[in-house]
Length: 300
Image (cartoon, rainbow, N blue to C red; front, top):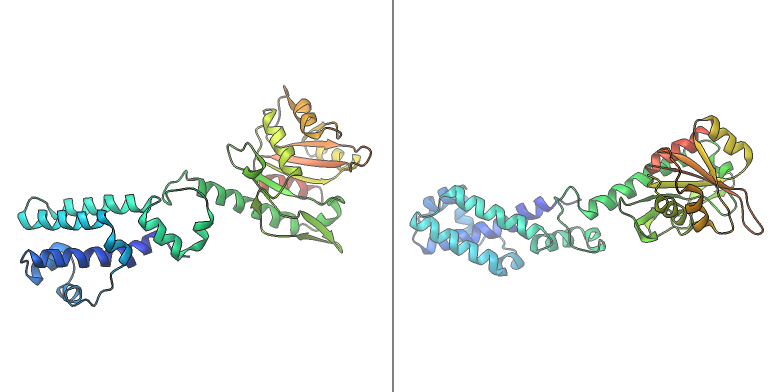
């Protein structure tokens, strides 16, 4: 794990300070004056002067960095710019370069996983899309641990397999829903997860979840288990609202069954099967751990 701040400290600052030290020396600053201007030791300035500090080529070549170095050096040499202003100007540029720019590119080189995220983002933005997707994936992982650690969960897995899904806050399509690729299967009495959660991995459970949201249900997660009347009765006894829908046209049927209803935060959908269609029970709720806990309650 490498933070973008480490990229700033290890790549940007040594290059920036080295370039600025050279500019100030060209303006006849003494080594001590350069050290005072940069807030570093004279030995550090000596290293800059003798090329013993490596410069990052990408940072050194960036016109904005070069322009700032020249402007700060000129301002400090004439007294028109204070050290505080120089600091502020440098911080502003750093924040800009971190936002889908030079420093974020260097960050991606150090953390290739970031390059897999499509679209520009600000790593410091608390509402960034990257943060939202990672939080959803983390939530699904927590829910999966609850399910797979629950003794007897494998007995609730239908023949088609189970899946646990959670969507982004503004989800509109299957690609906005994270789930287990390949589903969860019962392998010799053990719930087996095929792979790490990813977006777009579920067609079936994701479509039920999206249909429920289309009908106005305030839910972001769903899990499916096998159906029988005792399971539905147990969920009802635990206080969960239950709603049946027609299995022959699940997407439209879910919307039709839920539209206009006052729905709880967590509730149950089920269909009792049809020709060639396995009966299934769905628990829907605000997040993956919540619906996973509802299923775990069935096993107590």
